[in-house]
Length: 210
Image (cartoon, one colour):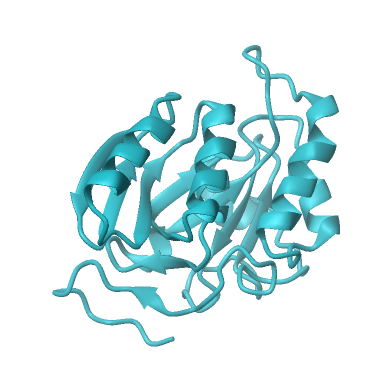
């Protein structure tokens, strides 16, 4: 991932390659005023880095925010935050966190890893994640399938909870129409977010009300 420091934010963007823990530690050591790790437009990548960075963020007592999309291993980094929120860096209807399982290089679900992943998610959601919903997303067979969590107050047509559960076979432009819309709690109820307040990164953007 690329890194940018804009205190009190450090911004990690792009694919997760495995170097993230080192570069994040260096940034935090050199900038003690950083309070929030912003995860920006990441499709995920290295699974171990997702876990290790998430644990480091939690141990350091840092907050996390998302700008744009944060998928797969990026979502585990996001769950490391003490306070977890969305930002005004990009349009709110284009901002989400997306979860699924662990997959081998050939794209097959590593089923033996799923109990550990489920337990990790529930723990780092402060024990708020609905176990039935987590069970569904960690067992998605297609690595292109995700559970998408949007801000509960966004206006997109993603069901009453603003949560989509996609199998990975849907047409991406038709995701809002084709994916399931489970009613098992929204992002706040599931501990994905800890607050509905929007982190103000771009002061020129119109502020969102909590």
